[in-house]
Length: 251
Image 1 (cartoon, rainbow, N blue to C red):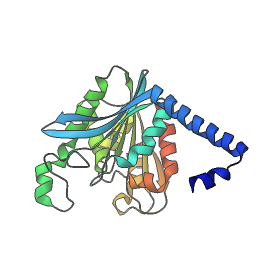
Image 2: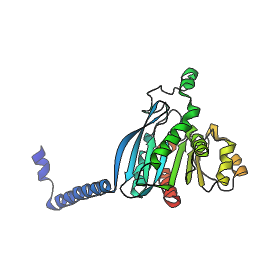
Image 3: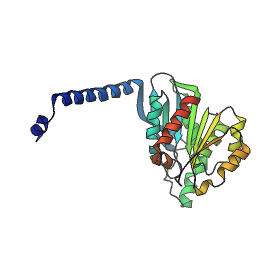
Image 4: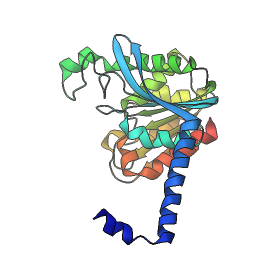
């Protein structure tokens, strides 16, 4: 059967196939030369936080990406690749009780006993630990750090910033628990803020009105439907490109 298939391939097509194979190999090697990708573990408060680090081989900005409630870091894979193409390092992190970071327990919706044990409201300390980790890396430009938070982690990244160090740019996907204090932060610090939400999210009713009544700098991007947080990235791939461009232009 293989021989029969080979006979149907004309010389010109064979040349084209060989060139395509060469180009794929070339660009793959080129990408590997620009950065290294590794799984990492950050220890904090007894938790072993798992993440994927893409680190450029030259000094670069970096973006910390945080999971939604009852989610994980996987939806950020495409965004991380787009950022690498733009010369930006990234860390996709599973916060405590989520994804692979479950050595002390797994978050289960509506399980009050489990949630008390995990103490999601202390996730901001995981973000501080991750921020400190990024600052310790030689190839990271400490003045050019961006955060992408989703759902509850958007508020946690702002709490972490107030207690440790502000980043240069924040992007929040469906931050239903975003506090008034965090909204006021937007205009009080030298940073930029982009909110992304879907039009019919029940947890986000009235959000734009509240934000625009308190901030002159914040921007809101809205997609159709009722999709929540990082699920927006999976349903609207163009949003990855929007976020990557925003980060490239602001870091």
